[in-house]
Length: 267
Image 1: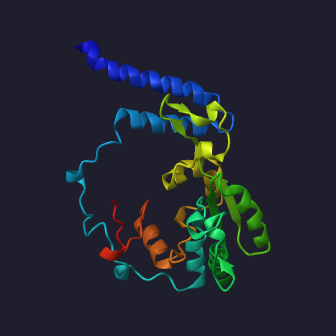
Image 2: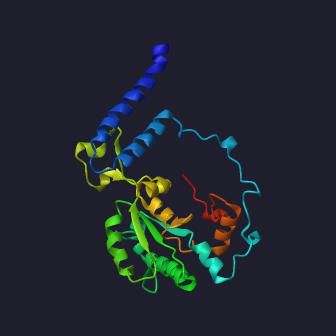
Image 3: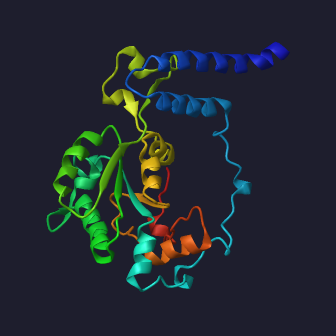
């Protein structure tokens, strides 16, 4: 009976070892990406991510959710405001394509209004802060392998703007073949459809692995504001930055109630 019980574990270990050997031979990605991918697959095989204990999921308490109207006002004098903003970096998630909107390139370059794209408006928003307060709020764009090349060309038009723009790529992971649990690129499928970007949760390891985290810290930056590149309502808010700094919060998420009409229904 013991051998029967251990068989699935041995099988999973063999699959992981075989996959690890195949991934090690992929020259298109870095060692950090290889390690991150294997860690993700290992977590999947362990069953850790397969079950959700819904009984442990509860609404956050009133102490955790702070109403925006209760936040203390931000400083009104320019020196104090500049001091707040000089600690900040704006990071926009720029890995998505505009395929659902009929475009082939990055979603951020879709024209929104009066000939301006999402990215144009983001640059204008941040540039206006830098000009008004004499601060240096940089813009970081986290691209994917789907958007990086196009984005690099597009950002050149902002070279004379009063804003530093930095780009980096999120991780690139190989797709798996179900039948033999091997990476698709190891079978000669090296085009883009043999890979996938692992989602927005990859932002923190990618920020660190790219070297951008160390670069921003060396400039005295302490806080990063993260939002999708197509969310123009997500703008820098001085009251929120002031609240974070004075309360020494390490992490904060801005949320809003959704009417039932906006909830997504999974069939």
